[in-house]
Image 1: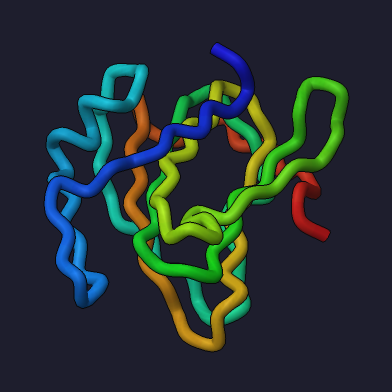
Image 2 (image 1 turned 60 degrees about the vertical axis):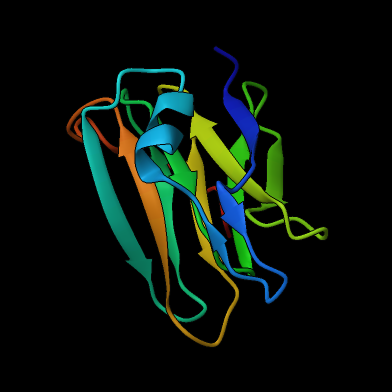
Length: 131
């Protein structure tokens, strides 16, 4: 797999009010690895998570605006993308094994995101993805 896979997620239901529903089991099936762990991660206001790499594969989905996914490619070049794009579309980011990555909350309030992983977190190495 390439270092990062960006999957556009279509909600199962939407409403003109902006409400949307994403079935987590169908979402887990869109991940291209065996999901062993499903968890919710909370990131405080203006905080971040990650800035590391490890051998497990992970995927992340955040249903709130103002959250950025950051990663370094094999050449060490920094990339970032909004987890909800300018058109309001949800993106699931899948991080390959040993891909340096981080998530930044740019909001003035905490956010929660969904994480799927192929196993327990181990052999974590700190990497400066977000300065």
